[in-house]
Length: 381
Image 1 (cartoon, rainbow, N blue to C red):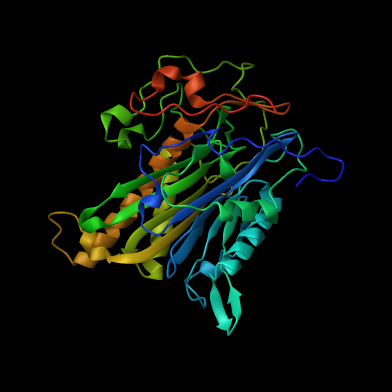
Image 2: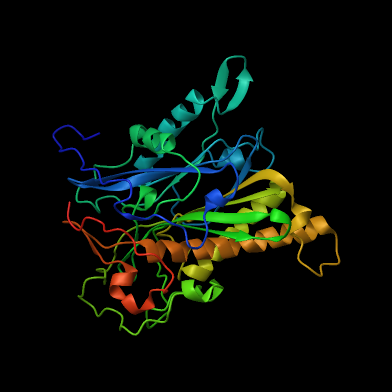
């Protein structure tokens, strides 16, 4: 909805700024998890909302490490609180203003009968949320996600392929230090016994996904399939003053992640999984957890399978312990791969306020031969 006296946004097609397949897997590879996204682009807008809707009975945890977080309902996920259940997780642009989007997600959950029932006929959805800073990147800092956009994203939640790149909460995302476009990414890892660990990220960091002195992606060695591994680029990094090199004091950021598993974990184990998710951020972005970032990782466990099934071959200790450690380690790798996916899926954005080339526009030789071409993003509002 446009502010009084402001033009309304132009809407892109659902597939017009995204990668439509998930070469590294997706968080929706976990049965019952849905993802919905909505965005506003043009006429001063460049922002959006991403919603992760888990199946009923899912428990949640969180670990906040950034110096400038914007969150809602994270205290409800702390150990020792009344409920472990999570009914949706909201990720949004708009800095602190964007937390309003969670109200729309909560309304959708109530309509769908998803929530805690403290009394007959009363439903209270638990919808933790976190936001990234993207204010003004579309040209007007007054245009940011609200409850209406959150409701739209939740209503769009589906299983199957997740749109990645410049969509949802990643629509206005950026990496400050290299001056590159960020976005939404996702990945999954399959362990023994059918256990899956997966992640979805909104990559919007002050730091860089590139190794110092060049354009090679940090964490690329974790991509095990040769056809999907980013190549060391031959292009030189941008010089000062070129597009893709931000001015000093480029602003505030935040990278968000949701890691999930279909294994059964207790709340303490799940909280540790959220913590190890931050290791994935540290492998993919340098630096992380700065005062300019509100880096936050949510963790979800649907409880479909016994975690002992994930114990690695040759493990001689208690199977539950081995499986739990394997799931936690995979959470870090999944987050790292999801950041790489976000970088590769991003497309260039140029507005009156920002000039943000995509990584693969700046370093085209780095494209993995098996990675799909993203659909074009409108270069001007």
